[in-house]
Length: 216
Image (cartoon, rainbow, N blue to C red; front, side):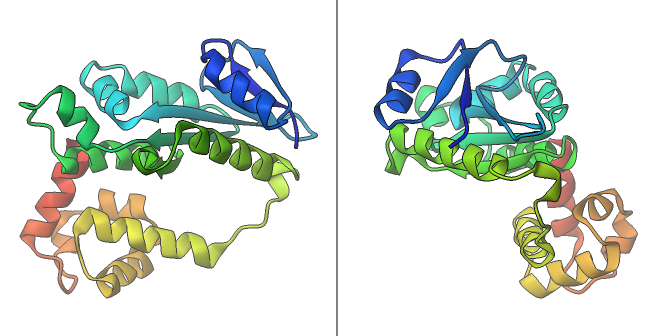
């Protein structure tokens, strides 16, 4: 496995884990992100790990957009979210923040900033499990040159279908029809309401839900 770079702000717990399982690493002050690794040509993959409750707090405090913008400037940026949304409510039981707003912020990370997102339910796994997954991701994306990793069009298309079904809460065929017509999720989001309403199973309520999620 290639050497993993760990940001100097990370805790000793992380370096202890990597040392114990035999993963090569070095500490470095990263301009953004918590972990990174490079391929043989110096192309860098950067992972920003956030607990979901911290992700939501960053959103409310106005820090999230600048953080995601910095991350998006990297060659291969990955946002790794761990935990459950319920953890945020445990600390703020009177919060009006909804799951739709969470998905809206996640959609913004994908659509506006072009980030790859991984959501990991750490509540049902250990912190070390998440570190192992991060190490595995860094290893996989840097074991070969990043610019020659083959595109998996079918898998990417299926991922877009699933993501669009979450955004609209619509049947799978409706998501497929929309993607076939517009080509990608960005164009669907940017389409006029009148055009979206011409599709079967896309009514005013679904369009309004999409706007609410995207616009916050």
